[in-house]
Structures are given as C-alpha cells and as structure tokens.
Length: 144
Image (cartoon, helix red, strand yellow):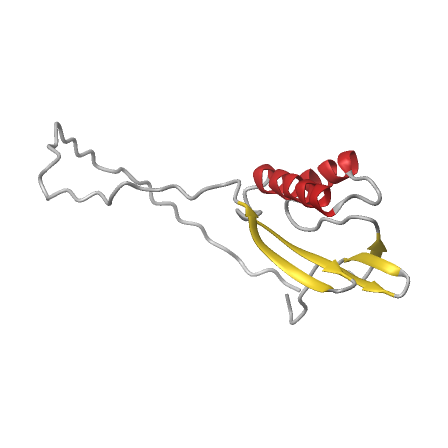
C-alpha cells in the first residue's frame, strides 16, 4: 500500500455536446463508452450490458437494463453488495435512486439459541494422549 490508494471510478455528466460516461481505472487510464461497469461483479454486469444495450433507450428501459446488469453482478460475485442503486444524470439535474431492487435478502434467524449448561448430554468421552517427537537441529553460520 505504502500511501498509494487505487480507485476505479465511473464519471458521468452532460455538457454542451451531450451525455458523457467515462471509466477511470486505478492506474490512470480511462475509457469513454456508452455504458460502464467496474468492481468485483463487473464481468457479469458487462455481459448483460453488451448483450442488451441499445443506443437512445427510453429512461424506463435503461433503468430495467441497469437493474438486470447490477443484479447479474451481485449474484455472480459474493463481494458485490446486495442492493441496486442508480444515479440518473440529465440536462436538468441529477437524481439518486436508492434501492431500485434488492436481489439478495439477509438471512433471518428466528431467534438466538439459548441452551442451559447440561442440556445436551455427552454420550461418550475418549481422551487420547498426544505423542510428540522432539527434533534437534544445529544451524551453522555461513561465511560471507
């Protein structure tokens, strides 16, 4: 690490030429593409985007595709989180959309286990001695 931190970023916005989307990689390179995915689930998400993306999609269709792509990333990789969030950037402003979908749900435990000592009977007990062999090793310094 030594003081250097790497980060992957997806940077988007709208300027006078229209919408822009860039992927910025930890080593400093960037790419401008019509869609982007970064992170541990990016391979599964990119597979969905490459298969179903179309230029000039309607907002609703684009959001559905986004949910499918991020869901593929989440389900294809255990380290990819559990909910789908998005940010829609338009000429008029940006809107953050939280929890569009939650493809994974936390495991709910009905209750904590509370057993009193002695609840579970010990059926048998065997104690075996551990036999060890002691090894001695002599090390000599090497002449340099």
